[in-house]
Structure formats: C-alpha cells, structure tokens
Image 1: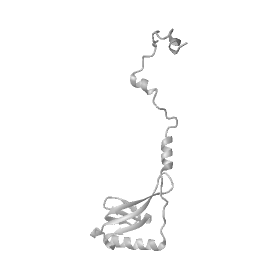
Image 2: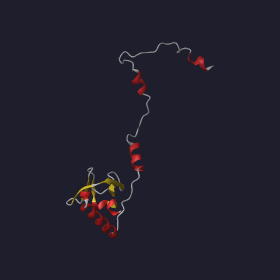
Image 3: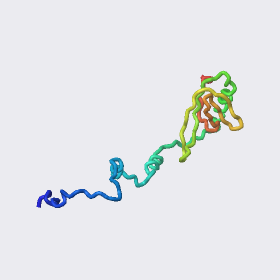
Image 4: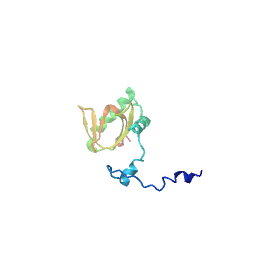
Length: 139
C-alpha cells in the first residue's frame, strides 16, 4: 500500500466548522504555536546570578588619613572649583558586593551631618565609601 492511498477515503471530505465557536483569526491561530516559557522569570534569575560584582575594599588607616587631608583641602578651596575625580564604592542592591564608581567634576558642598560630598551635578558621595581622590590641586 503506498502512502498516498492511505488517505483516499478522507482526503476529499469537507472540513467541519463549529457552530458554537467562530474560526480563529490569523494572529490568534499563530499564537498557538509560539514558544512557551514554562518558567517565567527564570532567564532573569540566571542573568542576575551571572552578573559579577566587586568586593568592597577597605582602606588602611594611613590611606584614610591621606584621603581625609585631601578632602579637607578640596573643601577649603571649593570656591576655586578645582576639578576632582572621586572613586568610591556603591553597594549592590540585589546581591553582596557592588561596584567602584568614578564621579568627576567640582565639589558643590560638604554635608557634615550626612558625611557626604555633593558634586555640582547633584551626585552624592558618602565620604566613608571613597577609595581614591584625584584633584588638580595636588598636581
């Protein structure tokens, strides 16, 4: 028996249409065959787990003193608007660790009650998170 003859008795029958349900439009019909994501959000979890964060580096007392002296000079001369680059650590909100960020510009003010530097662009920098300072006041 050849493959074509198996369907001879049904090949010419008319297609049955439901009296209760209208036929699907092309978009709805195609949607039946779209990929199915059984674990919604799984890709986001995998991406988050793969995202790398830096470990926070704690500086020693000598470096803290050096940075504090530099910061004191920068604040003292802030009206001269020296160009400053602060490197500081920002903790990650989702997982342990974080990243080191550079803020570049001029210092607008120092908020003593919060122990934060306010840059001219509005960036707030926690003083205890600062790991390095570069400033044209220091050559």
